Length: 117
Image (cartoon, rainbow, N blue to C red; front, side):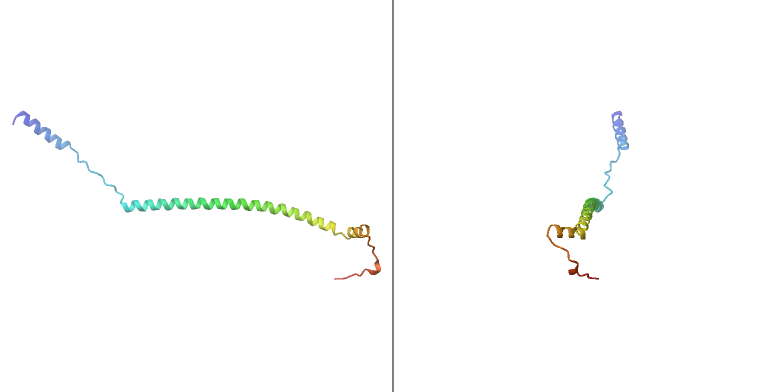
């Protein structure tokens, strides 16, 4: 063999030895697994959204409850004040003064009947 033939043969042998087999790695995750993973992700996000919505609703309701409690306490104070006015205005001495002074009525003890409970 000639020198050129040996060099070509030597190059061919080294090329065969040095060539690496390139294999394509297929995805180890199947289509079904991808669909299951995607479904689980969507469900997880839906649950998180639902929890946030419920938290916001509860917060709004708590705020409304506190506002109503404040309104109730204010109205209770107004009612107590009005109750005191009713007690003051329904005093028997005051009614007698108005009846005799402004309306011209007179009190006759003989015509008064006492009713017992």
